[in-house]
Length: 111
Image 1 (tube, rainbow, N blue to C red):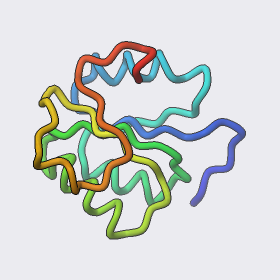
Image 2: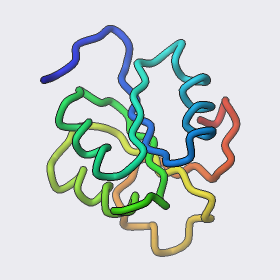
Image 3: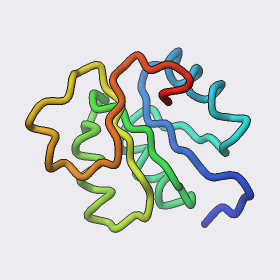
């Protein structure tokens, strides 16, 4: 089932409710915002929605954000992915295949 809407679709993948609430509040005027608390839920939402951008936390319960990113690329989903993490990016992230890297806590403009 694919969604069709005028606004771009953003999938917020974040296990901390307060953080996800902030992102949704900041984005919901300009985007159709959906949420997933785990990597497994995120991947199932990608099957159901026409997602334009994924805001992906690296540290998730269950499968990690890195593993979700790998699966997004393997499955050929046509969306942009911004990794969002409290961890400063190191040399290990150079070849990960994301479109952007945001260090927590972002402000509204950065997000």
